[in-house]
Image (cartoon, rainbow, N blue to C red; front, top):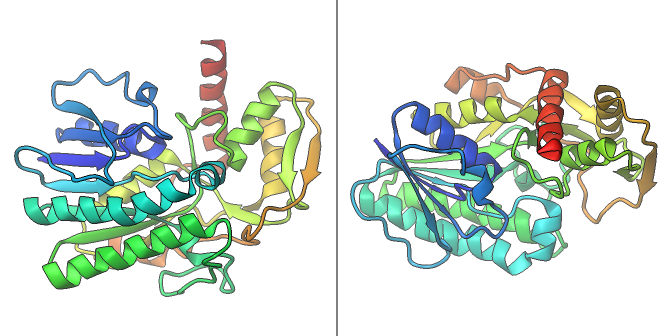
Length: 310
């Protein structure tokens, strides 16, 4: 079997490279390194692995057979897609189109990395896949939200019109090793600040909630979806809902940091709640998270500490 992973040098993409290689799958990772890093794949010493430095919004060609196309190329952190709004829209639209074209040409199974952000600031809680969302299309976050919503529509069009075997994973907040220190999302921000005894920056009053999952659970869910017969979107995330303030305090406890917590204005259109309804994943994939949030945080803190000392 042979897989192409766009965004293969990113946080999630690099872990998928590891998981597929461990199963004996040949992997071609493609990344323009706009937000990914070769450091994430530098440990791979496998003749079945190759890396292509390339922008997938351009014409995409891979020589030889391809069984799976996994499209994970996109800025995914608010600081990235606010800094790179056009690139975010292009990879969600043009990049998805090119990746689907590759899957169609190779008769490969296609998996789109979508996001819980398609639900926007939700009016239904928790969020089932049937919920259409509450998104501000012209707000600053719309470049990411609408890029992913368009990518989902295009993916389903290729499934219905061209008969491509497509999968859509809606990823909820995930953390773990290989996240960038300056990622901008809550967990790496808090860990990095705590380890440097800097104030932990909480936006708003910290009462907004998120559902934080660990990278190994996410990868298991993605691969289960990839091998399933499910074509409709599926939520993959941890339904254990925590406030952002609770997460900050948990990280202070784990790191033993004496940092204080400071509060700043809430960004525009920041969701107030976020929790996946994972009934579909449980019933159709036999999947549910296995790693406790506190254990996952300890593992992630240990990785950040090693990176800091290294």
